[in-house]
Amino acid sequence: MNNNDIVKVFAPATVANVTCGFDILGFPLENVGDVLTLKVVKEKQIRITKIEGFDLPYEASKNVAGVVIQKLVEDLEIGFGFEVEIEKGVKPGSGIGSSAASAAAAAFAVNELAGRPLKTKELVKYAMEGEKLASGISHADNVAPSLVGNFILIRSYDPLDIIRLDSPADLFCTLVHPHIQVNTKDSRKILKKQISLELAIKQWGNVAGLITGINLSDYNLIGRSMNDVIIEPTRSILIPMFDKIKEASIRAGALGCGIAGSGPSVFAFSKGKKMAMAVNDIMREIYRNIDINFDLYVSKISPKGAFVIKNGN
Ligand code: HSE
Image (cartoon, helix red, strand yellow):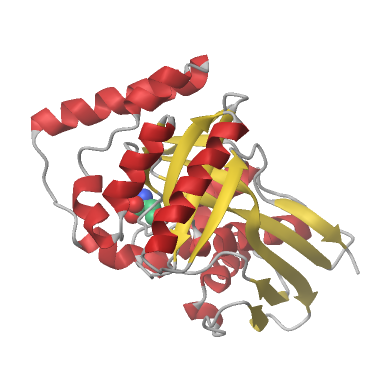
């Protein structure tokens, strides 16, 4: 066991799918995420004592962090309990991995206090328990980048095979979060269950192109590949002004643009911060004109996943 009996950790918000990579691609944002404090207690139970920021369940079995901790306690045969405090920096239903940030932070914190028996990548399957509770599906494209950092490709779910890819140095993300709520469970229900071979061919060409573009730092190839012909046509109707934001961002010079996770946030990639800021201004202008509240972020692809803010009291 670790000498400390309390740890405070941060886990970042994330953008899943990255257009064409439904359920298999994601990356973390800088400076936005959840903070979770975990304290060892003698009684063998998990008590959530504080949730700041948003109204979420305190009952451990109904809370994404709670179920992740419970599963780790069982599998690692931990002989004590925990008190949990969560500071939500990521708004639920925003599309930037709110449940994932809490789930990743919980898994990372338990591992720290248990003396790091598991590698960070091995924590992904535990954090996925939180996603299962939140959306009914244990997808890893938010929790894996939130834990591990950088672009993450989930090459396979069974067995879980997680590949970390360095981001091109000059790649920036501009993201707008319009304040409407789209929950992942509902936005998965509306998806078509079958696709044509013709669409599949287009999509896997784009996925391969995007991964190659990231690896070669070929910005033009990244842009050409940011094309989701399967999910976006169905989901984009839930997002106010989606087509206009996409069209205006690309016209201004963004490499590509798409839905962040299951929405409603929309993100664009640009080469260089100057272009990312110009896209930021375009997104702001569009939402201002229709009087919708929103948050804007400009960020690099964060190389950092979850980390310890403070160990001990
Ligand atoms: N891949 C998931 C989805 C991400 O699109 O439903 C949810 O953030």
